[in-house]
Length: 208
Image 1 (tube, rainbow, N blue to C red):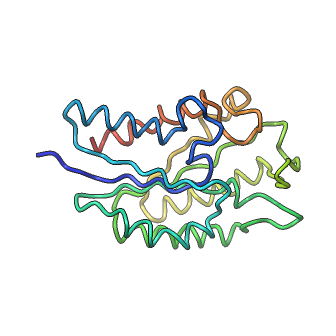
Image 2: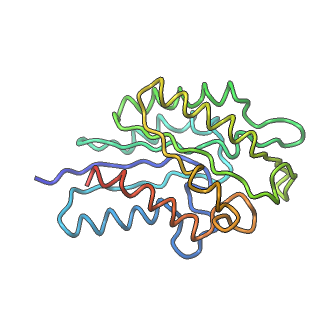
């Protein structure tokens, strides 16, 4: 008998799929893949792209109780939490979400997600292109690859301490980031989003 599960993807513009006019981003690629597998006879996995451009973990903490309650599949939920690129940004000399608060917010979100799911994935922050590393961009934000390492380490530590799963997009991008990132140096391009989907497909395969 077929099961029906939900996959909830919380995140910022990279979860939303910004700057990908071809595939719509990695989550949308996964949505199409899951639907194709369902049509071929697999279990049903309905994926919700809950990415909001510019959001930090402060926003996540406010909305995750409502989002989870509104999308709760009786046969199971998978939760992806993908934040940090905005949290670590400095705007007008102030870091948007300090590392300690970032860790606390992620833990709060996990506790909320655990009410509905045993399958929680923390997603790494991507590296930034060399041309925006340490540079104030048009949005007024300054980001550095050193801070990416600090925040990713927090995510890895929380993953280990809470027996969660870690999705390491950062390592996959590191050597080829200049060809996998879009012109803004922060968001993936179509090729980058495609690689993210390739890494994530084996994860969702387990539920199909």
